[in-house]
Image (cartoon, rainbow, N blue to C red):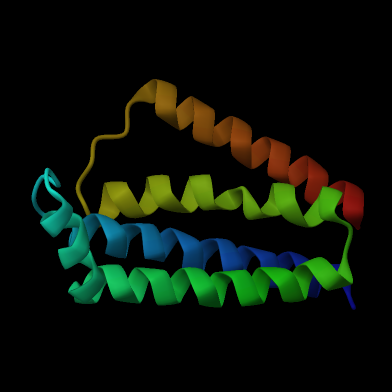
Length: 119
């Protein structure tokens, strides 16, 4: 399989996993203090969609993994850290400070180096 396609598929898997995190966050609106609170998550639509997203992400990730080395695919999947930071800032209005921006930039640089080395 073409390495560009593998990189794209891995990025899609990471994006799906990141959106699943958003769904989990939206599904947990109150503090979980009892067993009943945790069991109630099994019927929460956002949490269930997040779980479905994770399964879909895993399927897409495994497809990419069969076509390229783990040492390439897994670091590219780390782009989920970037996606989660962007999604949390845009959708959840979370504040992203300078230090976190620097960390995300370092992750981006590392992923870029690995992706270029695979080409």
